Amino acid sequence: MAAVTDHGLKTVVWKRIKETIIADCRKSEVWKILILDPFTTKLLSSCCKMSDLISEKITIVEDLYKIREPVLEMKAIYFISPTAKCVDAFIRDFKQKPKYKAAYVYFTDYCPDDLFNNMKLCCGKYIRVCKEINISFMPQEAQVFTCDNPEAFQCIYGPSTQDRKKTLETLADQLVTLCATLDEYPGVRYKKDGNMENAKMLAELLDNKLGRHYELDDSGKKKGKTQAQLLILERGFDPVSPILHELTYQAMAYDLIDIQDDTYQYKSKDGSEKQALLNEDDQLWVKLRHKHIAEVSEQIPKLLKEISANKKQPDGKITISNLAQMMKKMPSFRKQVTEKTIHLQLAEDCMQKFSNLEKLCKAEQDLAVGSDVDGVKVKDPMRTLLPVLLHPFSTHDKIRAVLLYIFSLNGTTDENLSKLIQHVKIEDEREFILNWKQLGVPIITGASSSSRKPNRRDRSQVQTYNLSRWTPIIKDVMEDAVENKLDTKEWPHQSECPAAWNGSGAVSARQKHKPSAQDERRTGSRLIIFIIGGISFSEMRCAYEVTQAVKSCEVIVGSSHIFTPTSLLNDIKALGKGPMETFTIEERSNA
Image 1 (cartoon, rainbow, N blue to C red):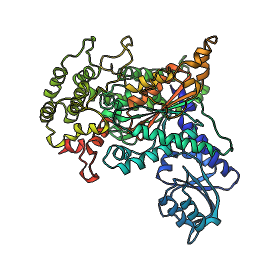
Image 2: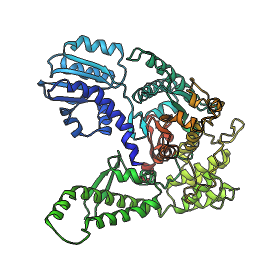
Image 3: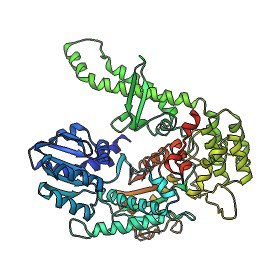
Image 4: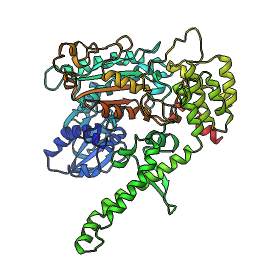
């Protein structure tokens, strides 16, 4: 899977930045200053290193909002978001007394006319270039993007209709820039989901904005649809995957270990505090992140032994040339050992936490899948849940188990729910459970509750670990989409899709004389999936698994943000509350 990073989203974004911002810089031999806002700082950090910038004659990187010393002999590149706050900060740099010789301004997205005119009026004579480069999304991984907007969850599923509309507009704008960066004009579809209208609204907004964007294309030609399809879903389509204890390496680590901003902090053997960044610069992380923890724990010690064996000279002779070769290899050798030591430690930390959760994980799988390890149907889910409630698991883990029990029944009675809440001792924090209804997930059974459980693909023949039998629903969606099996009643077309994605089989029927016609049509095609309200690590993994299996179609998945089970439950609890009222799981356990 490591090879995916060669053509992944981060590479595409860096290439786009080089073709626009950096290409303009090359026209001038002068060293320049790069000025960024918080979003573009994060964006650039995700796809390039400081050494990449220095090689392009960018010598200093500065924060737009911080007080900076004037450097009148240098030109400044402003890579900023098209907001009033950013434009005001830019104007302050030039209005009274210019800080730099000239300004090259690049906006992540479309700049409103009023802001542009204000810039032109106040400091037009200093602006050499002003462009919109259409990158207002965050490339998280090779096949994963976010809109870097965790607040979208509260805005969309909270009580304010105004916030919802404004947030969906912003998300649609960001998705347009994703499509523009990938040079795709996809057909758009959305999942019908009971009384929830967010997916439909976002699909309409996105399709209209894509139409306008490609009508105003720089080339002056109207772009036709490309071999891509974009699917939009509500977060409530799968409430199980985000709260289940996952045992694949990345999902497990982010659930059980306190990893902040992709940084893992740990103690080395000598007791010193260390930290490691878990990203795609670490090739071992890319190789291991989607594997089951049992395989990871087995592989890392083997890899360490291999490196040690390779370091020794086969014939045991020490010659000057051998020593020189070893010295040359030392930096990469040290890097390899460090990477493996980090992952040995992280895997050990995960397994240590897991040792107390094995019984819980078995109960979770039985509730989620609806059958036990032997395939025997769970007739009474309460018998599966009760041992969990009686065991001294944390309140957090019991809440997760209770939710899985409720989801397995598609809702429970008021009376039963009250008993469960008393059992877990969250009488004052029942929002952890009740607020799921704001995502369209049935919690209380009633006349209005229609069965929402989707038909699942049969995976009974697939070999799995006993504690990893559940497959995220998004994987079924991806596979059905690639095979043109999505039901048009459940997945209406917001816009016309290209022939290869028409869902009717009409194209392949006319071309039966070409046995591989369907594969040929889809070569280089993309399936883009956007989940409103956040995405889990297990769902991210599915994009890579399906791409690996299908080969002819790349699956890219994204959302407003990435969450862990803990952060999602805290967001659920906070729905409809102001920021001062939020009370998190961690705070409860520390109380």
